[in-house]
Length: 371
Image 1 (tube, one colour):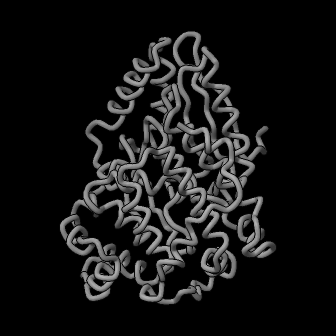
Image 2 (tube, rainbow, N blue to C red):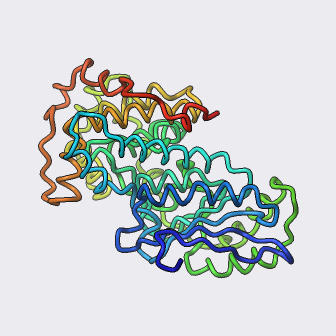
């Protein structure tokens, strides 16, 4: 089992109870989330949910660089080259099962702690955000970088980014900006800052604590453990909080072309902010409009409704040219020179975007039944 892409084990929690531990075990790929990983994770999480001796679950990863750098886009890319705009059964399975897993995390009946150390991007953010106890560290680098590959912030991103303060979530989706632990907490994507070096101490506290059959009480116990581990620690300064007024001013209004015009005309002496705005100008125009449209549509949708909508839009992206081209430019050839189609934001038409929302095939039962 040590060579498995996910390692499952249990650790002591009190006198006769346990925490289940799921460890992503593909550090060479920065623990990118593959279809095989998802296939292993979901049934094990359901098994722990039904096991009365398991009072909580820990999600972590092997290696110091990354918790999870996102979904395994290379596998998807290979299928996109083979089938083009035709039905893509791999994509149907991958997105359907990934979103089922993400929904399960958000609704898990027991305390679920995710240790988000290092790179946490895309699909990795989906795993982190779904947990009841979301831990970030001094090494956390979080981003939703989908505009760089012709996709959009999926894995529930159109739901949780819409719930960040004002337009900060929209900013993350439109710019692929990398943010730190304090930013993650400020935007509601994480709960606790704990230095990575204190992880072993947290596990010792879990082993020494008193747990019960009451999931709500157990969540409080875990919250107290994590709070105690982070008390007095110096968190990094929040870049989003520092630039919040500027960001909200740039992204004001209801016209994405006007927003783009303001961004293109704006310059900043702050390297981080300028880098994020430059990334916006280089991202796929189709992704910019999709991100904007989904952010607007999903303000009042339930999480289950969002996952069902994202399923169709993700398959829509698979049926258009920007997604394989973006994956090629960033992850395969790595020339960072994608040829987007359409090439300009002004050329993205309403019918073109509407086609991304079209239903392709049947909704998987696992998503159709989400509540």
